[in-house]
Length: 307
Image 1 (cartoon, helix red, strand yellow):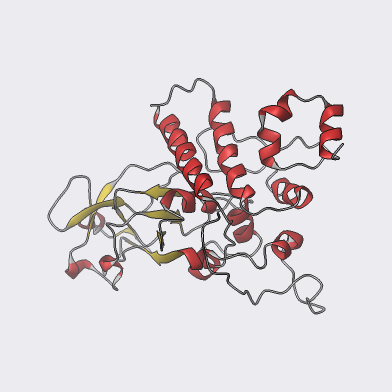
Image 2: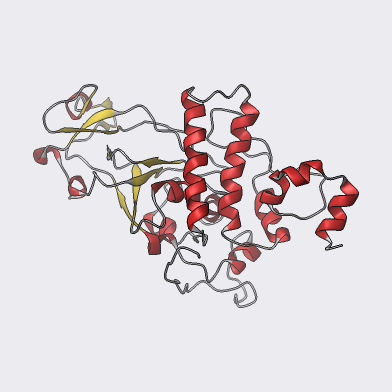
């Protein structure tokens, strides 16, 4: 039983349909395979954070307004949230400040969003120039955030804030953005078109468990002793999301190789998914499985060949 989502019929064309002279995004065979998958816009409502009517900086530097709009302690008219210039790693809830939601300070209507509801918070400006562009974390508390971040509110319980954060941090979402966005900022329109995996309820529940384990490890409350444990947990999260796309192993490998040697927004070293000299195709889930680790190369080749 997969999570029910409407199919979004994209106007994107296949590689074979592309007219001469039209630029086809890198990893075209990946996007061709995912063409009929639902999109993020089907499962979530996206919006930017609050904007104030007084600038924090100008051409001469700080304007002096920051101390009045961002506080370190709770105050009347202020709400806990992600302040301007806050950086965070994948899945990790950053230190919070208190942001002004006083009506007289606002520009636009973003301050009236459903801040209490669970959501995902993701960067609006790319984190790196390479393949890993996004860093997102699930917010179950109900915090606010500045306009330099984007909120992703689930439309149903099927894809909650944990599942959506896993999708946004995944190789598919990052590659989708990296192969299309050439500017520093990531647009809402681009994020809305990210293909969604078709995940079962049990997969969504497993994602929550793994993400919370990873968060506890990052906060130092999980008895991990090696960075390799965090590295593996992050790969297990990615593997679960990739399972929902059901890509043939060869196409999945093309996607994963796009991230070879690339820096990811983590506090620990994130290693490549598959060794560079491996010429056998298998899914990331298979590669991480105990059976794979125990198999000899001959047994593995025989099993993958269906023998």
